[in-house]
Image 1 (cartoon, rainbow, N blue to C red):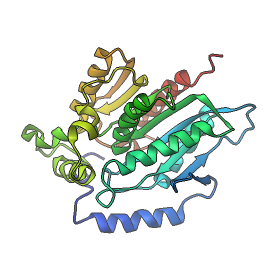
Image 2: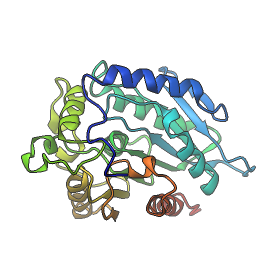
Image 3: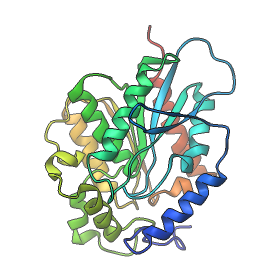
Image 4: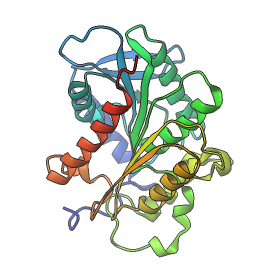
Length: 288
């Protein structure tokens, strides 16, 4: 699959067409998920386990990927349903505002609004709320963990960062400008970060540039060795550990960006999902 997958999925020229295709996906999506809207208008897609479970449930706030410029929560319906069913939890997928129309901090604030809404919901155990996302969603989850620490309203029990988009400085690394990357290369990365940051100060807006990571939620980080985000993911995991934040790392040899979405039934993808599931199971366990 890596041999035939494109190196660049999103660019300034392809974005309008891709957004049309994503909207078609929304029209064809499953109706099994309930939907809610926060007081500020943020749409949340809710996946609950079909089997009845007593008492307030633990929950995961899931943040979709798309380079900060593309995507909808419907694109991860299958993943969210699998997590909800296998763990007996509520998975809430947030429809955050996208760049470049809505640069930082719009998307992050939408995710924060969704997290606080989720924690206050009467059916949710506020002591057991995790946050997570893939690619740009993983970058937003890392930023959300920092914002949650700073504001002190909700204390997530885990930040699940799936090949996260954490560091805009990767775009400036000429040593990464080669043909091995799939679905997301250095040019796509430069476009996504420029759109997201706008006029914002990267030292504040980019999670990997934040100097103090202490006190954030325990983390799970997964990434492949053929992913543009491999180096920044492993560097971030080391900085978390150095800051005293528990962090487990799953490195997948030979895996490219989004490999588990392209081939979800491959053994390596099933193993990658199982690692995420078990990290969430441990983090969301009832310790009362």
